[in-house]
Length: 356
Image (cartoon, rainbow, N blue to C red; front, side, top):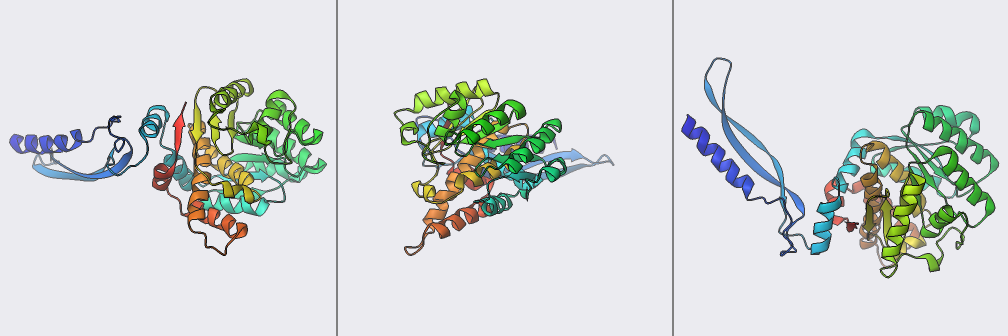
């Protein structure tokens, strides 16, 4: 029996040793994990002292010969990422986090739908007498200042203080910060009093919070602030510095997305320029990101990056299904559909990012 046991073990080990987990940077097709099926056999002794064969059929991660991403993408993804981004999406679908949204009324329906699509559960309430109770039964709080009024501002702070007491993650989306004194001052006050877990906005909104004032094109980023390949190094340094000073994860979205906790920065390149023609993709992302960080309490940075990559990838997938006669309204729905049908494996394969 010992000979059979040794033969089985040697056969299994030989199979495993062929799966080199280290990236081979001389081969651009090596380095991305995929699932490979293995069959292990061994022997065990049952309760009556009899030696019996035992088999295990399972999956291990190996290197896909079909990956076409560049060497730098392959290496940086595996070197800097704490976990695979698709795991964060899978966690949302497993735990179905309930997210309290105080968001703007332009996009409230889309925010609710994309939360359902990603596996979360939405609830909307901004009434000051209602929000503390609602936040108490939720796992995370999404604060979006896109259509401020005095009632919603009071509701945000009541809900925020309750979420803070319960140690729930809070996301701030400072829509239009820099466009008006009310928006800017409200966002700065939320930062000061509630210490949000994540702040997600465009580059102009984030610069306004960092410097106390700024310029925006309404609720869109100022062209002069755009993150480009030429300005990427300085933008990464800026977002890391602001994340450290604010003690929050900072997510800047645009043509190139940046997500940082002050130590690491995810540089994400998913998405389509046509997404800018749809009202509310940023608001939807904030709702979805709140679900991701709620379902991944030990990996909030990776969760925030996963939400950004998922939204951008959904834009790519949705656009690939567009017909010649269809426009931005259909595109909005196709993005939500792409999120609904996305799996962790799809996200892992489609995410385009590096970690700096």
